[in-house]
Length: 403
Image 1 (cartoon, one colour):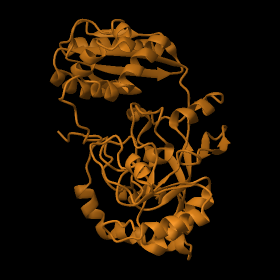
Image 2 (tube, one colour; image 1 turned 90 degrees about the vertical axis):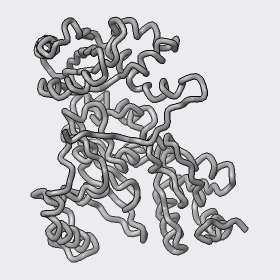
Image 3 (cartoon, helix red, strand yellow; image 1 turned 90 degrees about the horizontal axis):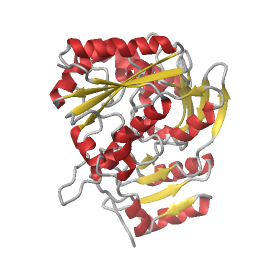
């Protein structure tokens, strides 16, 4: 009889799940092997896998797991690079069936979705309404909204639109004991039920530790490390903020309510060329002062590898001058095209002031911009295409300097 290191009777667990769920229940070695890896360097075999067909499957799976003392691990696309989606647990994969857009209010720019919907799929649905969800991660063709909420995704346009936590309005959550709660700003205030109790307890936790949180919480623009306990100090705290970034440790996300943005009418892109990687990093702090909608780096390794890949080699010649050690993609977007063109001029002036003369290539047409962004989004795959035994190892999701 198959048992895990925790002495869980997997055969009995699998049998009960199959008897009560309509979705797939996968406990065979091949399926567990598939779910033992993600985009990271790690490998841990799960206890088993559930691919729910609907909400009721998830509720049943969570309750059965709770009764048997089995940990549950929500999983989306598995695109994270530090092993968040693997572990010795019952994996619940919502990416196959839980993909619906359950509510859209285009006037209020709010949409509610199931956790398994992929970002690109959502944005395609929203585009006919002139809207999009602005957390533009490089894995948008695979990343699910549930996974993005789980790891508090950031994306290329975070300077303008913030992090995932800034764009999630509410979460309908399923707790470990099977209870359903709807978390949003002000939910639980003055109530005496489970939600009210959790809200009061979290407020007491924050009040006890407010000074410590203020002293220790990283003061960086790109912080996705750990629970967002600092946000409990907001004037109207939202308990959903604690779920965002919790990596599936606190609840299953049944529905996620998102704040949308209008698609900018005009975009322009400046490709800033640098002789060294350090020069690119040093210049970034000045470039963000121009209030771009996006800034992203492409380093020499990616550029050199892309030059040998037919799918990218020809387009590379259209926006790279010479052999830079790094380039920064700097995007400006808005309703006034002339204003965005003036911003490109300001970028050229800034680069000149920083000692980088004639170092900006202007990408004003949308087809050229799409070509450039497609290269940036493929950067990880390009690096992984490196020939020979030496391969890069993914073990850092995001990093930031406090200097």
